[in-house]
Length: 151
Length: 135
Image (cartoon, rainbow over all chains, first blue to last red; front, side, top):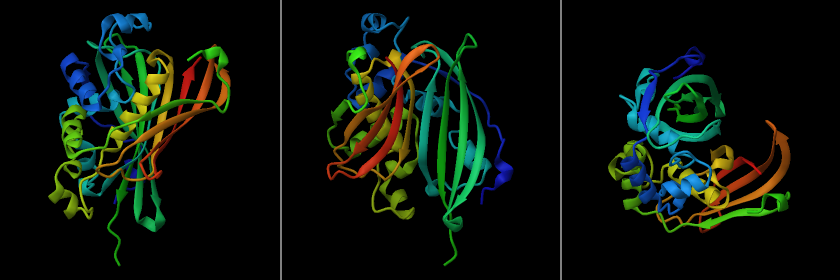
């Protein structure tokens, strides 16, 4: 079971390119028709220097470009079948645009047991910077592990 | 959205989505990079104790984000957070809503806080969230 010793643990930084084709696939999957994400003129009219990404897409970029998407689960000995997503947050500091190269630096910020050990909540924070070193966003997620409880 | 007119209690976000299909889950698996088989492989989902595959929490949050930036230009979005309250099943028809809860000043600009929810067609809450927008 994951314990407090995991707090402070950092994982391999992830470098992700914001590629137009992959973004279009995401937009099509979601039925996203907002021209700000599809049309450079609409994006400029909305105050962007390029085409921006939808609000949750940072999460996808990190997962798509990581060498081992389940590195954390392997490192902490967590069974993927027992993992649920508990919470997710994004704080946006600067625009993320098509063509950017982002760096994600994830680390474990908290470990808490709930329901008498039936669940472990793991908090992970991630600072996101772009190719110019601009701090564009912070993401945070809580992973819920459903532990095996002896009956 | 006329920023000057916004006040606490206003519902400014409202969008209804078509039912979530297995096809959507398969596409989202590839589009998002979230390859956890629990969302696309029914054998894996059953072995993990679930009756069937179910939607990625982040797919549901992406719908809420879409509803949000339909109403608020993405350049105005400062923060977006959700708690995943319940698993979203296949076939769910999601309704995403957002209501202004507070107006405040921060970082030299006027901002509003929104309370956000995503419910299925039975009214069950799937996501309980919030956003901060610049006015």
